[in-house]
Image 1: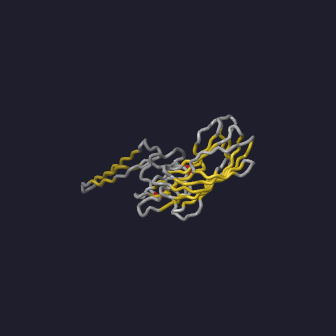
Image 2 (image 1 turned 90 degrees about the vertical axis):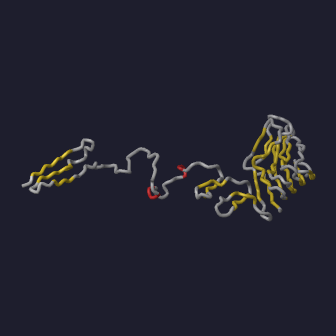
Image 3 (image 1 turned 90 degrees about the horizontal axis):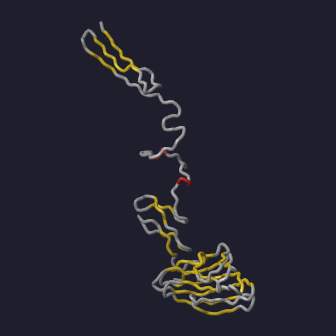
Length: 266
C-alpha cells in the first residue's frame, strides 16, 4: 500500500499560468521516497515577445546581424557627414570618411591598409573648369576678396595654363576692380582683353596686378584673361578677386556663367 501526497499551487505573479503540480512525494512499502518537480512558466499573449506593439528599443546589445532586416537602415538613420565626403574602410576595417577634395583632384589609392584620398591629378591631364553658378552682387565694398567659385588648388613647383572668361554689370560709379591671389613667390604673366562697348583693349601684366577698367555710363563689361603661372615651393590656391572701385550703394554684379579653365602642365 502506498500513500501519495500532491501539492498544487498557482502563482499570482503569472495570472495566465495554469495551476501546476510542483511537488509529489510517495511513501511505499519499501519505505523509499520518490519526488518530481515541475515549474510554472508565464504564457505570453499577443504581441509576441520581441515584437512590441509600440515604443522604441534602446541600448540593445548582442543583436545578431540576422536581427536587422535587409535594406532596413535608411539614409535618414545614418550619421551625417560633410558634403562631398565619401565613406570608406580604414586600416582597422571600420567605416571612415574620405575628406572632400578640391576642383579637379582625383580619388587616389594610397595602397593596402590605407584609406584613399583626393589628390591632384598627374601632369598631362585634361583641362578643368570652375564656374560661377549664380549672379553675385556686392554693394558698398571696395576690398578685393577671393571669389568663392572662381578658384582652384595649385601644387608647389608646378606650372599651369589658365584661361578666364568673365562679365560684370556696373556703372561708371561704382565701377569695379579685380586681381588674383596666388601662393607666395608664384611667377607668371597674363594677357588681358577688356571690352565695354568700345575698342577691345589688350595688355600684359602679372596676375597679381590690380586693374580697374574704365566704365562709361551703365555697361556690361566683358573680360578675357589667358596666361600661365609657375608656383615656387609653396602650394596654395589661385583665386580671382574683385570689388567695387568706388564704394557705392549701387551694386556691382559678377554674372552667372563666368568660368575659369586651367590645366597643369607638369
